Length: 178
Image (cartoon, rainbow, N blue to C red):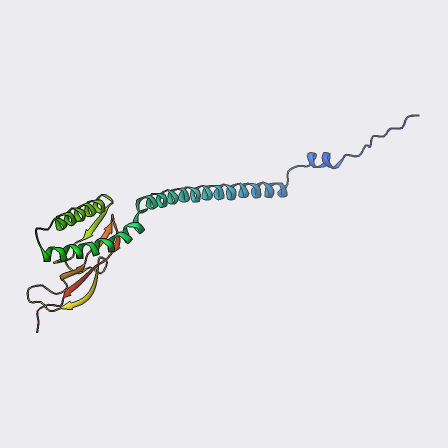
């Protein structure tokens, strides 16, 4: 005797396949479409963030290369100042000295090196005072120099390309004496 082991009642899978679409299926379809839009927006934002990061990294790398020698040049500038003071003192003692002409050549080499490295002196004397480029240490009354114009430069300032390495130390006119 063989017994029929098949069950005549439909299984749970068959029941869901045979159901007609109702409101819950439409709601779930709407939810899926909303999720797709949300994930698409998230992917686009992430892609844009990554692109911005890539551009910023490239710009920072370019700046790092452009200004890599800044700390070296900042340390070299005081040495140049002292050398120029020694050169001025040597000029005061004797004009025709061989040592003086040698010091002049070294001074020219240092200046050429700084120029080739992108360092330019900040021209101050006779210029209007700019606190972004100049450091005023005194004011002086002057009949010949207008107010807020630099009377004299005490220490030369330097820029590396478009970045200030050291401001020029200056004396600024406060106008005609009273």
